[in-house]
Length: 89
View 1 (cartoon, rainbow, N blue to C red):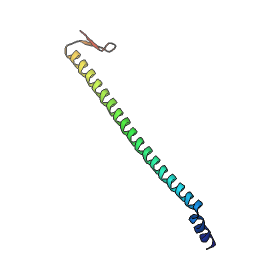
View 2: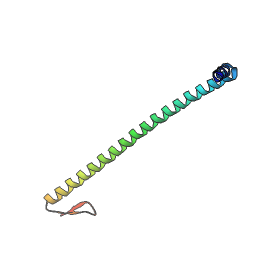
View 3: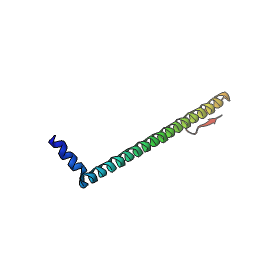
View 4: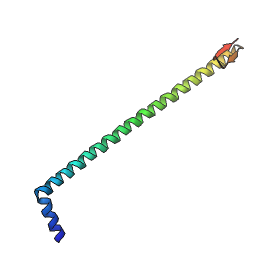
């Protein structure tokens, strides 16, 4: 009980009230910082995932384009030149 009386006297003193206020503001500021940081990381991860998906789509389109050019060359009886990407007939 002696510790409880001392703690209540300290918390009710002007210095104790100031310390509680500073601690409360610090906790709120830390929470806001952590919330903003998490939101920023989530936005960055979403942008990175979108970039990867775009890269995959571009690679797929390039592969499909190459396959179509190769097939058209073979159908015309030509020889596909892999260095230039052109059809030598």
